[in-house]
Image 1 (cartoon, one colour):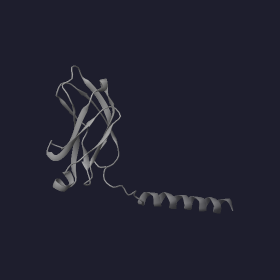
Image 2 (cartoon, rainbow, N blue to C red):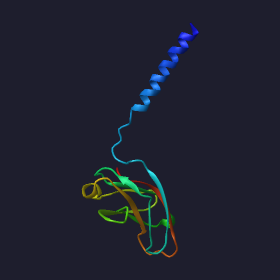
Image 3 (tube, rainbow, N blue to C red):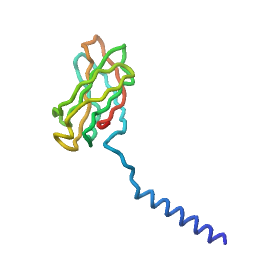
Image 4 (tube, rainbow, N blue to C red):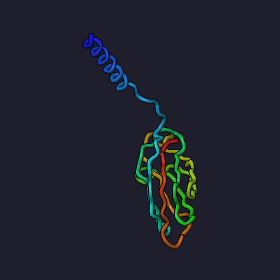
Length: 136
C-alpha cells in the first residue's frame, strides 16, 4: 500500500515538474530592471550595460541616487552608439523617466544602452545610480 501511494506521489510530482519545464511565461519585451551606476565629471558621459530592445515601447530609467542635489540627463543609443532617434530625459534623485526612441521601428531587435551625462558642468564629480530597462 505504501509503495503504491509513494509511486503515485512520485508520478504526480514528475508530471508537475515536467509541465513547469514547458510553460514559458508571457513577457512583452525586455522589461526587467537592470542596475547601473556612473561617476560623471564635467561633460563626460557614461553608459549603462547593453541590453536587447525587443519592442516599440519607450525605454525606462530611474535615478535612485544623484549626488549633491544635481541633475543628470539620459538618452538611448544603439550598441555601437548609433542614433536611434531618442528623446532625452532629465532626472534628479528618486525620479524616473521614459525615453522615446525609434529602435524597433528602424532596426528591429537590437542591443541598446542608455547614455548618462551631468546636466551641467558641475565642479567635482556627480555620483549616480539606478535601474533601467530597454522596453517599458
